[in-house]
Amino acid sequence: MRALLSAISYDPIVRIKIWRLSISPHGLGIAVGFLVGIYGFFLPGMRKKGISEELASGVIFRVLIGAFVGTRLFYVLNHLSDFQSPLDYFKIWQGGLTLLGGVTGAVGLAYLYCRRRNIPFFSVSDPAMPGLAAGLIFGRLGDLVIADHLGKPTNFFLGYRCPIPAIVGETVGSPCPPGQVVHQTALYDLFVVVCIFIAFLILRRREFYPGFLTLTFGAVYGAARLIEDFLRADKTIAGLTGSQWTALGAMLYCAYILLIKRESPAWGLRGQPLEAETPRETADSTPAEASQLEDRDIR
Image (cartoon, rainbow, N blue to C red; front, top):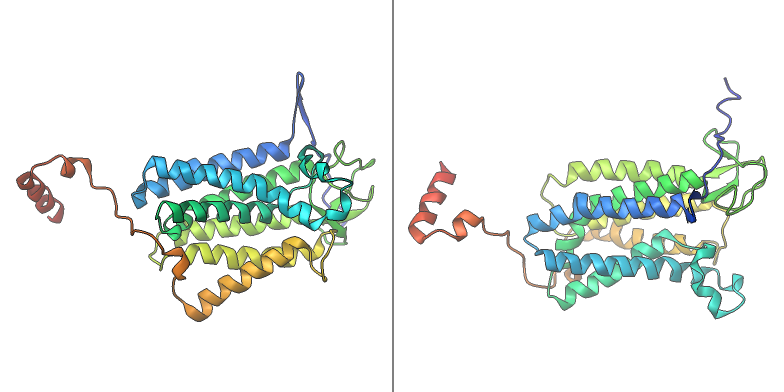
C-alpha cells in the first residue's frame, strides 16, 4: 500500500488532435475557466451592482487583453537570458506564460478602464473574485492534464512521477527528469484555489467594506504562491522567482490594508457610487402606482 502512495503517475495528454487541429488541454482549460468566471459569476455580479452590459463588456475586454499581454510580458522579463532575439519574445506558441503576470495585467487594464469611466474599481473587482477563483480551478485542471509546472525532486506522496521519455511538448508539459518523482505544484495550487472559491461563496453573502474580497484574494493567494514557488524549478532573482516577487508585494500590501488599516483604500473608491437598477414595474409606474408598490413591498 505504501508503494502505491509513493507518487502519482499518469500519462499526460499534451495535445488533442482533431483532424488537422492540435488543441492543448492547457489552453482549453484556460478558455473554459475564463467563460465560467465571466458568465457564471462576473456578469451576474455586475447586474446586481447596477452596472450596464456595455460597461461590463468593456471591463471584460480589458481583462482579456491585459491578461494576454501580462502573462507573456512577465515571463519574458523573468527569462530575458533565454531569448536569442527580441522577435522570440512574441513566440508564445513555444510556451512561456505566467499566471500572476496575467492577473496583474488584467487588473491593471480593468482599473484604468474603470477610472476612465468613473466607476469605483472595487464595485467591479469584488464581485469578480469568486469568478477568478473558479477560472483558476479550470486553468489548473488543464495544467494537470498536460503535467505542467512540475517542480523539484521530492519524496512527497503527492509528487508526480515523470514519464519515460519526458519530452516537453510531446509527452509532458514541462521539463522533468524521466522516471523521477517531482513536486506537482499545479495540484497544490488547485487545492488552494478550490478552498478560496468555497470561502468566497460564503463570504459574498455577507456585507464587508468595498475591496475586502479583492484584498483577501490578493493576500491569501499571494501567500500561497510565495510558498508554492519554492518548490518549483525556475529562475530566481535575488533568491525569489519573478512570480514570488509579484506575490510577495501583493500579499504584503493586501495584508497591511486588511490587518492594519481595516478600511477601503481610496484608489479603489474613486468614481460615482453605483445604485441598484430600479425594478421595471416601479420605473414604468405612475407616482401613485409606485407608492402602492412600495406599500405592498413593505407589507
